[in-house]
Structure formats: structure tokens, C-alpha cells
Image (cartoon, rainbow, N blue to C red; front, side, top):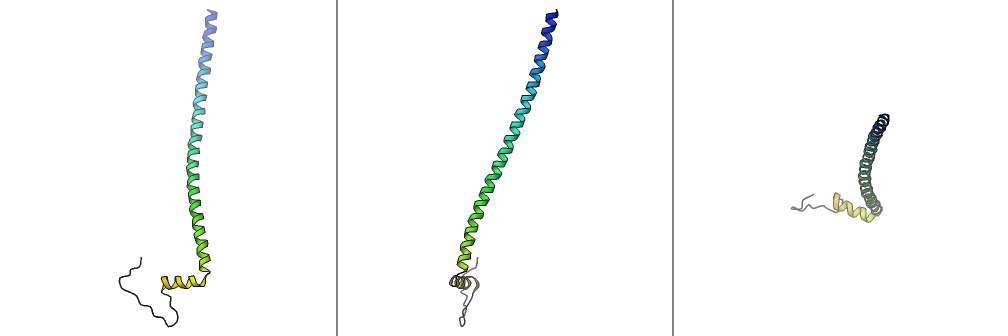
Amino acid sequence: MAQEKGRRLTTKSRNLIAFFALILSLGMMMSIMISYVDYLEDKKEYEQIVLKRDALLEEKAHLENEIEMLNDDDYVTRYARENYVFTRDGEEVIVLPGKSEE
């Protein structure tokens, strides 16, 4: 009977240890899952930032090119004549019907 009681305590101890191991395992799995979800969100945010950076770099290159062209007097004059009806001395502007502005 004493041996049976000793085995019974050992079985209870094993069950208790197994229960705590199960709880610990579930906690660790939850922690890993939360970390993975955070990783996926950070990865998505990183990809969006990279796309935005690429768009900004492209816009920067375009603006630098435009700055270069605006330093050219001939380009500025042609641009002003086409877009802002800039005239030289003695010229008249004639607006043709049927040409619509966008």
C-alpha cells in the first residue's frame, strides 16, 4: 500500500509536470506566433517604404532634369511660349478655335 501511494504521488507529479510543460509550450507557441505576425507586418511596411523611396528617387531625377532644362534660356522661352502665351516684342497671339486646354 505504501508503494502504491508512492506511485500515485509520482503519477500526480508527472501529470503536474506535464500540465506545466503544456502551458509553457502553449505560451512559447503564442509568443512565436505573435513575433511572426509582427515580422509580417514589418515586412509589408518595409516593402511599402521601398516602393515610396523608389518613386521619390524617380521624382527627384525628373526634377533635377527639369532644373537643368530650366537653366537653358532657349528651353525656358519655348516653354513659356507654349504654355503661358509668352510673346516677343511685336508678336500677336491668335487663339485658334477647336483647340481645348486639358
